[in-house]
Image (cartoon, rainbow, N blue to C red):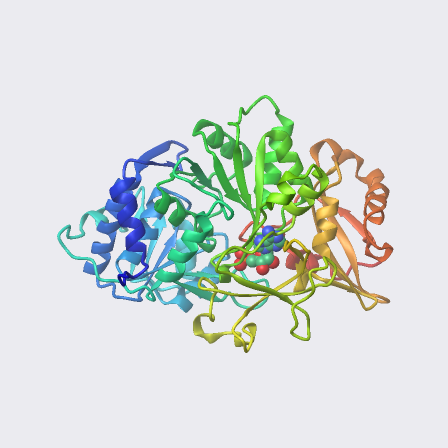
Amino acid sequence: MMDVPLTLAMIADHAERWCGGVEIVTRKPDRSLARTTWGATLGRARQLARALIAAGMRKGDRVATLMWNSAAHVEAYFGIPLAGAVLHTLNLRLHPEEIAYIASDAKDRVVIVDDCLLPLLDKVIAAGARFERVLVVGEVPAGRDSYDAFVAGGDAAAKLPAIGEYDELGTCYTSGTTGRPKGVIYTHRSSVLHTLVAALPDSLGLSRNDTLLPVVPMFHVNAWGLPYVAAMLGTRLVLPGPFLDAPSLLDLITGERVTIAAGVPTIWIAIRDAMDAEPERWQLWPGLRMIVGGSAAPEQLIRDFDRLGMTIVHAWGMTETSPIGLVSRLTPEVAASNDVALKYRLRAKQGLVPPLVDLRVRDEAGHDVPRDDRTTGEVLVRGPWIAAGYVGGHQPERWTDDGYFRTGDVARVDDRGYVQLVDRMTDLIKSGGEWIASAELENALMGHPAVSEAAVIGVPHPKWSERPMAVVVLKPNAASRAASLEGDLRTWIAARFPKFWVPDAFVFVEVIPRTSAGKFKKTELREQYRSWTW
Ligand code: AMP
C-alpha cells in the first residue's frame, strides 16, 4: 500500500476540491449573517499559511487565536497547521492573567483576534503575554495590523511545506479544576484518526446531508473536533459568533435549517426553558439531533427534548481525549425493545466505547471492574487520539505504567457495555466514611419538574467530615415556591437514594456559577459555602 501521511492537508484538499461550494454561515458581532463556502474558506486558509511562512513561522511555532466560532476561525483551524505551525485556541472565558500564563507557557508567537475581543487581548498583554504580532479580524483600529491585509499579502505562488503525520497540529489547555492549566498537543495523525471515527454513524454520526451548528466553542477542545469532521464530509456549517443565548441560537437553528447541533447541557437547559416559555415562537425541523457532552446530560433533559422534537445524543470526553471517548447509542437489541424507561436510562449514560479507544474501568487494585452496573472504578483510556503527556511533562502520575491515561472520572459498566459516570473523583462527597456521588444527585434533582439546574457539593461538617448541599435554580414558574419545595425535593431524593445521600441543605439561587466551558463551577460553590453552619 502507499505510504500516505495522515495529515490535515488531505482533509482540506478533499473539501476544497469536492465540496467547495458548500456554505459556511457566520453570525457576525453586528448580528448580521455572513455567507461564504468551504472552497473560499480553504483558499484563504492556504493564503494564511503562506503569509505565516513569509512572516517567519516555522514548523512547531505556536499561533494563537482569541476568537468566537466564525468562518475566519475555520480559516485559522486549517491555515495555521497547513503552514506547519501549531494552532493554539485561547479560551476567551478565562481570566486575562490565566490566558497570559497559557499563552506564555505555549510560547505563542502570533495571535489572531476578533475585533470585539481586542479589549480582552489588551488585558492579556498587560498581564504579561508577549506576541510578536497581533492580527485583527474585522474593524481594525489605528495602529493595529489587519488580519485580512496579512492574508492578502501571502505569496500565492509560494509552496506549502510537507507535513509529517506525527507533526504537531494544535494545542489546547485543560480548564483544570485543580492546579495550573496543562497543555495537550494534538498531532496531524491523531486529528485525522479522531475525525474519521467521530464522523461514524455510531459516534457523532454526521453526513454531507447535514447542517451543523457547533455551539461548543472553537476554543474548547477544538469544538470537539467538529470543524474537521465537517470539512472531511463536506457538511454545511453554521457558526453562532458571540451570540450563545437561547433565543439567538433558536433563531439560527430554525432560520438556517440546522439538522445537528453540539454543546454542553447548560446551553440546552436554557433552550428547553425558552421553548417551554414560548411554545409557538420557534418551528423546528423534524429530525434535529444535538450532541450533548462536557458534563452529564440529565435523563429529564433527554425526555424533554424528545417531547420538543429534538434528539439528544449523549457523549463523554476530555481535552486529553481529543475529545471523543464514549457515545451513547442504543444497541440493536435495546432499540428493538418496548422498554421505554430502559432506553432513557441508557441514553442518559455516557455510553459505549467507540472503535480505536481502549477504555477500562479499574478498581484501586488495578483490576477491570465486573460488568455488574454496581462496582465502580476509575476510567482509564489509551488510543491514537489520547494524550501521551502534558506540555512540559507536568503530572506524569496521570499515566499508568502500562500506558493508560487516568481520567479522574469514576464510573461503572453494565452487562451491555454501557459506561456510566458516577462522579469526578474530586467531586465525590465523603460522609461518615461513605461515598456520595454528587453527579447522580444532580441528575435526579434535575429530573424534578420544578428544577431547572442543580449542583451538589460536599461542605465540611464537624461530625460527618462532609455533607451534601444542593444548590438549586428553580424553573421560572416555580421560583416563588422555593420555601415549600424543599420538603418535596428531600422526598424526591429519599425515594431514589440511600437516606444518608439526601442533602442536608438546599440553597435556592438564581444562577449557578459556570466554568469557562459552561459547566457548573463547583470549586467556586465549595469556596462560597465552606463555612456553612449546619
Ligand atoms: P474538559 O477537558 O474541560 O472537556 O473536561 C473533561 C471532563 O468533563 C471529564 O473528565 C468529565 O469529568 C466531564 N465530562 C465530559 N463529558 C461528560 C459527560 N457526558 N458526562 C459527565 N461528565 C462529563
